[in-house]
Length: 608
Image (tube, rainbow, N blue to C red; front, side, top):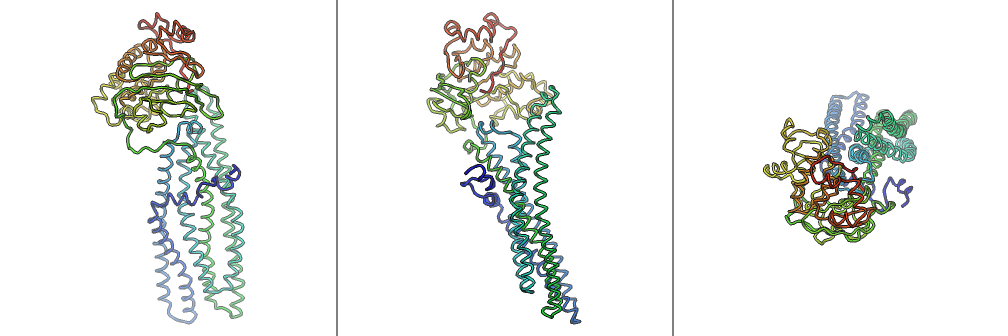
């Protein structure tokens, strides 16, 4: 199916279910509550349908000079019952609709958390957030006004027309003709509402993406004096949403007023034709009054049906945007509740065999046949110019991405054959920017190992040299560290990330520029800690300083996505010109590396 054809079908591919089936999937767990609400709505409609008949009886009794107390009592009871049952039905339906929205949000957010990293990299976080929040909210109206409104409104409409036929078939024919004209007009307008609604929702997502981009780098924006420029970008997206929403509102208003116009036309026509029939004696005045009451009563179910159609267009536009998320590649769903720890304590072996990799089919290769092997235990350092593909090695080990060609093996088994939670349970990973999440320091430390003893936590704090930080914070481990750890320094965030990885007791520890923001004293202490850990597990380090490299058991030199050499520091200085140049220009000098001193770092390795 072409993109144009997909757009015409509401953003749905040929192999995908229509929007109403998707909605029914969310409704199914709440079907009994929804059925109860629908039945209450039908009862409300039935009490309303009885009102014109009681009114006709009242008029006939007045004409015949009979008692009207019984008719008045029934009329009062019906009005009260209509109000009470209607309110109860509305509450049940609204509550159920909120439950449907909750089900949709749970489903969509669970899928979002399982998306492949490549899918998230190709998207705007703000737009994805919009799909899980504002788009799912539209399912509320779709449930109450489309699913139930079309059902109860349609049934009430049919029942009303039947009752009108019972009262007078000629007047029914007049009314049906006017309604048919309105139906044709609404059928033309409905697709226009869908397209405008989808554009409005997309613009809301664009606005969210723009705002998230600004707030995520607010210091940079302010330092660059770019507030006004970014403000114009966000406002432009908001204006596009406004324009599309106004267009949708215009067509919805035309549809709604078409119904009003049709009913007014029907009333005038019925009044004229009915008056003539009363004058000729074909019907009684009470019959005309009853029929006119039905014409008035017809307005509510007819509006319900029209509103159901318009809300369906709005809701199906939201579902089409949610479908776009479900089309994104995702990882298998986890079966357990908490992040697992590796069941084995043995260090892991790692190997790359002819690995070729590109981030997208239209992008150049990042790895051009990478080969190296890392035995269990010990520390292996990866060095090379920026863009050599060092960070990509770690991403492939974690299976954030899968190789384009070749194999990555852990313990001799291709990572593609591992159960993904089991593979990641064996790995501790410290990223370049060492992200810290909103919450307390304790929450961040235990993020990957929630079931950790206080003794183990205290030992890891000592290992990562975080004890002084905990003592300094006003509430210790229970201090809230702020959004993205804004209350911590860069070096403190790195130490938190390292401690978080160590608490998982990994068989394979990946440190990507893990000491880049540490001062010389803490860097030296942590280097000794990593050296000690490497005696018990396998450690891979993207090297930042020569002091880290010289203590490594082996060094992998990378350039332009290829492994140029593997060896120890002394071997590579003597035999590899690239490594010798890196050691002389980007790392510390041999003299500085021999003892403590000011650390001269390299720029951070990009995620490539």
